[in-house]
Image (tube, rainbow, N blue to C red; front, side, top):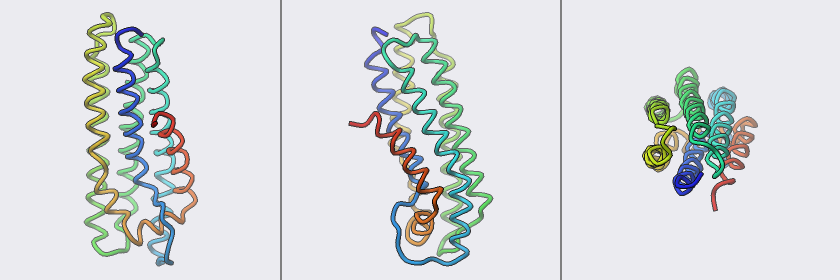
Length: 201
């Protein structure tokens, strides 16, 4: 798609950054034994979150596929719209999962849990806004579409750089160790790593 190729590359690059956000919810350091309550909490969260992480990875892959050179503006818009909706839904479901799991049995567990839930809900809202912006793009005029897509890509880039500090805080120390030992968190990590790695140099 002449004229929008650099924008497509920017969108794809921003998406690969966005995939990293989901990775925050998969502990990757195994260590000391943790208490049963915490293990139970980690299992519940990992089991509930794993399908959502896969959903985000699939949405990212779908958008990246359609931002190739030969896709029409309408195809790109359709993929963006569905992808952003799926990602928004996934983050909302992750927030609900952590909310329902309750606070982890660690120091400041409740405070960290609430912060992570708020952060995930904010991400859900941000992606819903991106969907609205994408849906409003003019697909009949390629130049206008490219300009609009540039704006969406810029927003997405900002979003991917926002990071997930509250999630990282939630997963520090014992919580991260407990999550790292859950099979569902391990499999979620590998699935997202593959999709994110596909566009990262």
